[in-house]
Length: 355
Image (tube, rainbow, N blue to C red):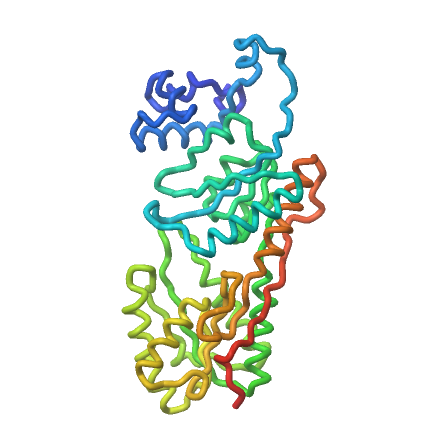
């Protein structure tokens, strides 16, 4: 009989981790006296073996009658932070506040857990059975694996993967939004355009840009818009080299713009569009008079900078839908849908010119 077909105990965890029972007990109960490496190792093993504490034994030791767990109304909202030293952005804080307000109206009370991949998933309230359900906003499969079949689970703004196919997902309908943006390009008379994106691949292999770029190409064909190969610029852009790389890309676009070979540029996100706008201004290239810019996805629920035409995340609707689905799952109601798509809001802005 393997560890996966019997009740896993802390003795099994200690044997697999090569540490003492007291170390296992201390780590799982949230003690901070152990090294980060030891804590991550213990938690990773606990999740991989699907360990759950023996709550009945705990109650018997405490002189209590064993009874079915009562629902607490507490849910956990798990978000991903790539770097433990990153500060929480204003948009992240806004989304957390929005989720809390909407959750309380449903009788749910969220706690936020910001997940760092290198640190691992270390969350005693989950493993001790204090949480009724979870909304997960990180693409890392280890998080879903740690929670799957332990409590009701909804993925929020997470790319689809076959491993998560049986978990309800709430996402933006990016294809609908991109279709609307390209329709605006077509109505404005643009036929030959450029495109830029990053081909950087994170260590976790979760590139969010390539699917968007593929949609650009597919929808451009449907709308009879040419994304010129000579004006398709991509490079290894990431947070550390963003400014330098975008300056270089703007310079590579300059002759194409001066010769009027392209009339617009599309980017996967408004972050790129914003930096292009700033670089073009320093080069005396005016947006939209000399070149129009489409910013693709703007993940914040605020007006994009510089009036950049884009599709904005409808975070209120995303959050509300995810909470309603989770509420039904907590109430033991079967989800009738596993893939909820929310239409983005199209912000036409001032960066798109009719020609």
